[in-house]
Image 1 (cartoon, rainbow, N blue to C red):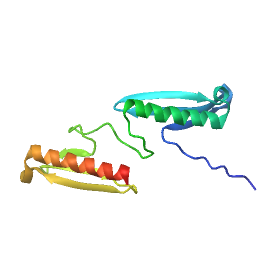
Image 2: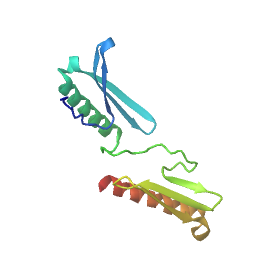
Image 3: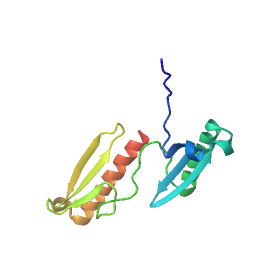
Image 4: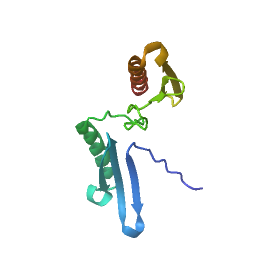
Length: 142
């Protein structure tokens, strides 16, 4: 009977084992506001697989704190692909509204919209941004 090994996942930390290059260790990559910070922690230099993992996690946490990124194991999007420049808020010109989307604490998609006709363009955008900020805070703190 084969033995199953459980590997715990750590956000922003990946295991690298390349026998042909004799490279074994943990690679950490912290992305925040368009910048990537990365570092490799070798098993050989850190005193083994577990020690290198602990060093990698400590570096990740310290780097996040230094750059002002919130420490969480949940996925956070910090770059917007919309013309509004705000993650999760997009302008729907055809329907004359701002649409807000988010993911809740259990991974389910949520959506709503704010009417420009009812609130005016500037106020509708402010309301949409407030909704998005509230929903993201609920997800991260809940």
